[in-house]
Picture (cartoon, rainbow, N blue to C red):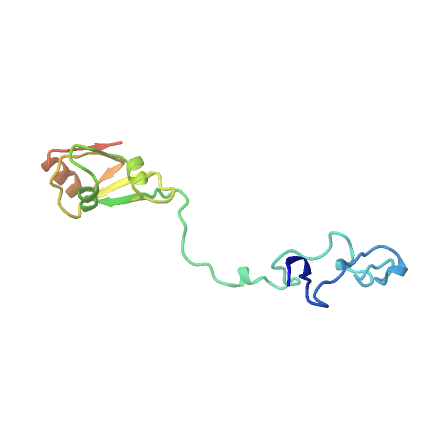
Length: 148
């Protein structure tokens, strides 16, 4: 068998239905296979997605729960033990550098430093927020905690 000998299985390929081409086409003439009259026979006819014929739709029947705060500010949280492991001595820690090292992922635009773990080297940490313990530990190690 060669590439040019390949053919689709008999009966698996159908001709395109050419509608609206008169009575001789075999597709209904003026109705073109859409039946007689009604919403679905018209061009652009039919109902929208999820429409249930006037019955109250499922998304309205179900109870709504909870609350989504659109003005909520999200922070990427990083602990001190991560900074200890990843950054060398006397380096600067920013959100951009954490993204480059793949520690912070996603579209979060603010950074918060948490106080888990110990810090033994002086680091300059630039973040939007610090926990009290994190700020204390950074300064004890001889570093700076700068609020952006």
